[in-house]
Structures are given as structure tokens and as C-alpha cells.
Image 1 (cartoon, rainbow, N blue to C red):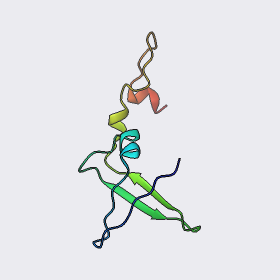
Image 2 (image 1 turned 135 degrees about the horizontal axis):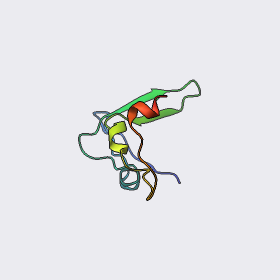
Image 3 (image 1 turned 45 degrees about the horizontal axis):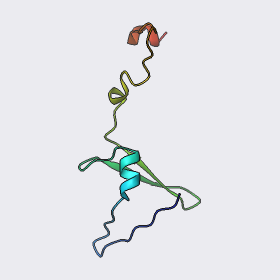
Length: 72
């Protein structure tokens, strides 16, 4: 799927709503932009922490592991 946005005279743009919704991007979130050798720009969200993922992969009946157990 392709989305298009324009750049203002101040160098600002708006991320299309369907992309913001898909990645739960909210006002105040921080992003980084990396220019790749092939001139592709990679945008990454900086405000998403590994702590935000806690419990996201939980399955009923699965035993929880401590951080210590995971690092073995």
C-alpha cells in the first residue's frame, strides 16, 4: 500500500492516519530517520520500549519466566 504526504515550507509533514493507527503512533512519540545507501529512508519509533511488550505474547497455560531464566 502506498501513501503520499506533502512537505510544508518548514519541512514538516503529516504521517497518514492509517499508518499512525497501524503502529499506534501518538502525539509526542519520538522517531529516528536513517538514510540508507540506496536512498531509502527508514523511520523507527523511539518511544516504544521493550516494557510496552510485556505480556503481549502471553498464552494461557504457559509458565512465566523471570528475566534471570531468560538470560541463561
